[in-house]
Length: 417
Image 1: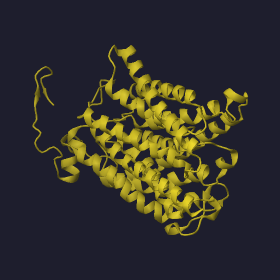
Image 2: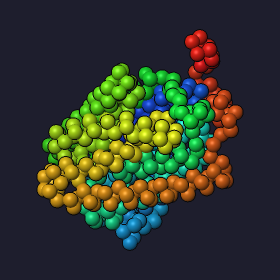
Image 3: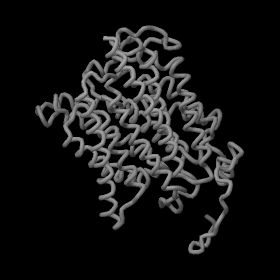
Image 4: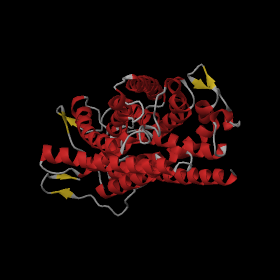
């Protein structure tokens, strides 16, 4: 028994390391997809998401998420994560479970930084990061993973398409809407392309995230007691990511006659997000379908958010994490081999998944709206036009991330780049 417990603990801690490394992936994606003058600011936000989130989640958020249920809505307050948490039936030490959940919490917070990149005050962002880690994320987590009302209904979100990605995605959408677009994004009513400074960094970030997802999804078993299940989750995770990349590449190639690199990279992430809810519950064939459709969704929703809603999301945070998180969660109700509509003809699971998606959207959009508005009315949410033009690196942190860069003139466009 002690040997099995040790193996399970080692597996969870190894998976924790993989998910922690995803922070580097997010940092590279967000930095690469934005401009060089804001690279240091992006790094600081990602770095402090984890640092601030680790402290407040240990102090307050974990207890709120996993302590014994209070009216089905929230866990009882338990400061410093004290307690045995015997009601969870863990086969690993509590502290191993806390650190595993901490890296998941940090992922949800980090998603938001990309959507609000290049124009958000650093101090104001830290306040948001604190609150999402302390309250917004743990409440949804309790509903689904902590024994709350959605768990009681049979809602299935194995590794966090809703708990992590939809929460981060909905908050990202609200934040990007409230803070407004970057200067020059919508000139004469038309969306302009503001290119990121390094597609290489973006690609490196996606590879790191793909790698880290092998801890994110398989690690959520919390055990190596069923190696077949762990292997199956590895396969569904990888196949969905690959299909997402192919789907996004295909639609951009068809639409624009050239395969778009950035959208293809986001397609892989879309596939990963889409499969995360049902990675344990669907077949390999269904994983490919979910991933491919997620790749199509990330392109279509990106266009809608950018051109119709006129919301400036520099890295596609909502489309990848929000839209595909919703889609993947709903697809559990269709493709789950145990209870899915495709196998049973019964809509019950799909209905439960839909209720969870809607409840999460209402909670996250509502709390994020109140929080961002409160920050905006007190500290101010957005930097000045001058600070945005000069870059947040210099104005917020007093640094130049690429000290050897020189300003060059685009001879064709006749302007500085």
